[in-house]
Image (cartoon, rainbow, N blue to C red; front, top):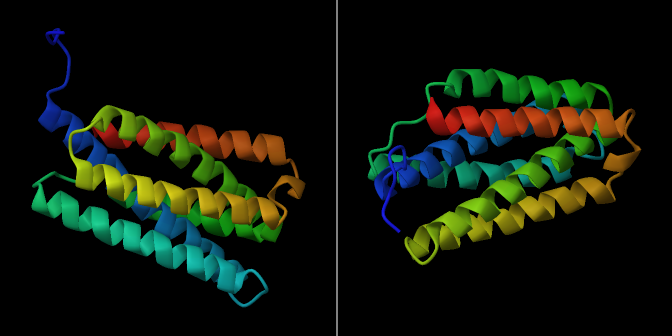
Length: 178
């Protein structure tokens, strides 16, 4: 089917994918850093640290890819740097279960986001597709850890989870474009 006015070129689609994924992984690293600042010395500390280390690998990978592909990062990176830490620390201040509720909400959103990207890529970009699928598996693992550690027992879980998912979807939309 021929493109219609307003359709993105393949290059623009790939730039959006790399831009938003780099921004999302920056936000994830900062969320876990915020959680560690509050809960790092408690029982959840080692679990959060392990998830943070995986997110750091994701961020390093997308930092490398945007450099190699000459894709500009989102102009909103400074905001995601601050907002991620604030979200992580803020939910951790409500307790471990609220921190895990944050993890579940974020990772559920990213799971769906990565699934859409894999569909967009189709058979193009097999290495990028493989990377996204691997990272998606790790995000699903983080969600499962959050659920195992009592996320759904957090105070006001449905409202907290919905607010975080909405914020994530907005951050994704903005980071693709700005």
